[in-house]
Length: 235
Image (cartoon, rainbow, N blue to C red; front, side, top):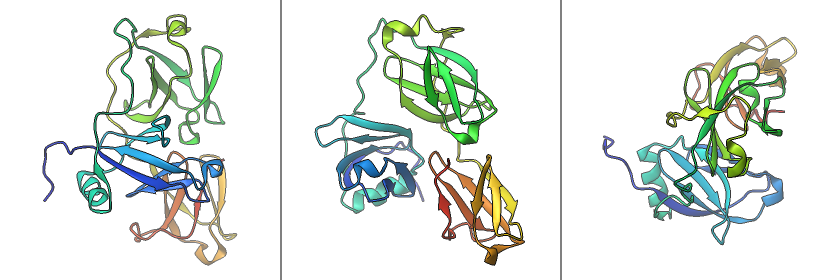
């Protein structure tokens, strides 16, 4: 049984592994090999996950995919109840804006002369980007929140963005997209324009592919809870 009330946020300290791909409960957070060996503080609830430096500086913010049960497990594994979200609030006079963009084949868009990567899974799709003084929220064409980034523009530039309009509310996060593929006789599949070698031992098998913000994970059909060894970072 899981209580329906909102869980308290949890804070914990983790050391970034050599791969740069940190795991928090069941969620992977890509920080990069450059931060390998660095202790970081994680602030997480069922809506948002923030990665902070030892002195409280924000490294990354992402939508949380953790459940209340996951948060309870983190508490039991050395975590502690956290305080308010570690993000400054926008100034009262700052009005959030949003724009529509079509994601290019490389998973990028341009806003105010800045190139922003929103992820290969969104390539070719029309998205909405909501910007305030602090964050940029990437919303897909189904109205689901797909990614949360640091706002790439200063507050004074928000009102000068081409085609900008007053922003609507931040939507709920979307579930990670999943697709199915049949492995070729050469042991490979192709997802979102990327070829992935899963091995000839899996030739002709039906596999399930989960696309996350920084990884593509391949599961043998019928074994969703047991991932195969293939978990490739998208190009």
